[in-house]
View 1 (cartoon, rainbow over the protein chains, first blue to last red):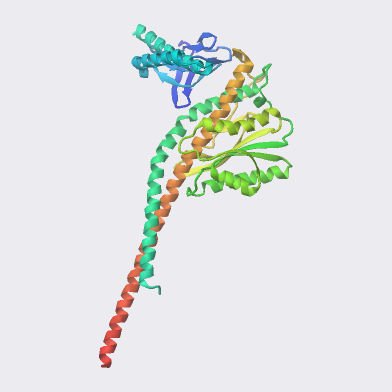
View 2: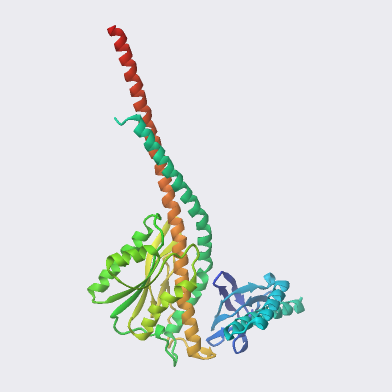
Length: 141
Length: 296
């Protein structure tokens, strides 16, 4: 018998990123990485920038989606990710992420007010998470 | 019969009108594509968000967000009206304003007061003429929906809701169905309704579940629900505006196409009349000359 699956929808305000069945999903929750199997108890949480990994039935490679933050709803048969921005793994660009990281670090060094620092740090953490996702992807390949 | 000079002037004036309507048609057609893409792109997001909001409305939580608690009696309603800034887009604004007027009468008949937030010039003008109570407004939004500009005015209404001055928040907007068809809709956004209507007219009901939904909240329910609810309202307003803009450009393109076609028809009719009068004048002149020659 095939392993049970859970429906995964990743949407951002700009587009529907991913929609399909998965055997297992890993998500970057605000309180730490979450691993979701089918029939998980209902859960609502914020997510931080990071990679969403999905194990797709009948597919050796895991599916990767990078999210910039947002909200996550888990129901026994469904996972919905409302991402602020989401990027498919294949669209991730290491050079662009490195540039973003450098820019964010510079911005943090130059900023003075607390608000500006907070913005810069948010940008930096997003860039770092993107790089992290790229590295994970590369290690597998 | 009108003189041929007047007819010629008339033809020229209709021709220049047609030039304008033709140009507007083409501008609208090019803007329409982008507006429609934008509106379509964010539809899945709002549907999922609505889904979650409807689940939350049924969830048993220790913390009840004001948006999730239905009020017992509705004494005052807050309405958000989305219209276009400019006219010349067919019956689109007329339809939505007719709906507003009808709902307004129903409310007044029940003794319910209404506070309006007007988004778009046409709606604001209409509400002012109607003598309605407008608490906030945004006009001149350009071609892209900007959430930042909407947040302030919408928040005035949300604050009133949370403070208990307003018991229900209703939105009026135009849904984009296809290029030829747009529909005026109204719907409640707070308290969060139990169903929501897709642009196709399909009704999506909240999946009722005995005992309601029980969630695990991370980090904590109040923080999370506030965030989700803020996102919910912002996204709805954004989507309404995106739908409105896509509808506006489509309606304008269709209206201007009809205007250009009509102008073309009028021109060819006038041309016929012009030819006839010219011919009649020539015939008359000839007859006069022949008559005069015969008399000599």
